[in-house]
Image 1: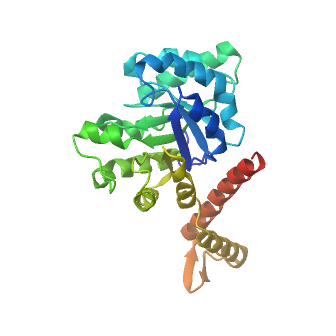
Image 2: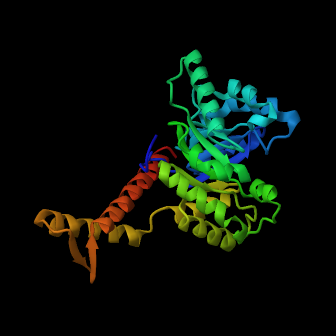
Image 3: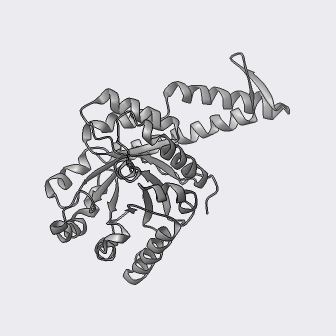
Amino acid sequence: MNLGGSKMAVRRTDLYLPANSEKFILKAPTLGADVITLDMEDAVPPAEKETARKMVRQHIKAMSVHGSEAWVRINAWDTGLTMDDLNAVVIDGLDGITLPKCSGADDVKRLDFIVTDLEEKRGLPVGKIKLAILIETAIGVMNVDEAVFASDRLVAVIFGAVDYTRDMRVTRTDTAEEQIYARAKIGVAARAAGLVAEDAPFPSYKDDAAFEYNTKTGAQLGFEGRQIIHPSQIPIAERVYSPDPERVAWARKVTKAFEEEGIAKGSASVPVDGQMVDTPVYINAKNVLERAEEVMKKDALKASLK
């Protein structure tokens, strides 16, 4: 259990592509996403599920050659396909598994148990494969508070707007007023557990202005990344979810002043640019710098592997 800490996960962009399409799979590593998820669920028709499993086994290692993490989205527990998916994909080279339609902590615990068993049987490092959960139903939103603490493997909790709005019997919109409660609750739950909150895909991929507005709105609710369905969305999402340079400069000034003029001299508050900086402001500034460091390392890794 990770009470409010950080698992150092940078998932600004999580590029989804159908796991049965070799054309998309071969191009994906060059697109610069933080995470590449080979989707074995919604993007793959029933007759192609086995082809998708074979493609994952064949190509999963190549997904990370340019610094992206290599993930898969398996089919949900209620489909009867989950065990076949797991038997196929828990292999060397896989960084993580996303479980769709997570309804609560038991779904996560069950997945953790099976992945652990497969790792042990196959001689893989136990615990190396991470997990993310998709919250996309009313029951999932209600139970997310417990689900985020159900496994030490968890690094992200992802919102699924299309299935959520269908389950709620409301119309999904690009302005997303109908999603505010679910997004806010997921953001809080993720932060409490030290996980990355990852926003839903934005279907109107040609509308950059609407995509940026929606992404910024989610960022204000605590989201630090999102599912990407088109490569054109990657630069916008990376910019929005990366620490603003002006805020990083502010954080450096605040930490320097508080440490040199406050802590070193026994004071709990110091003036910076006409405003008083106390301990909570200092901690906030430190968090900004830590996040900036995480993002810088991720970008440096991707740049070094181009």
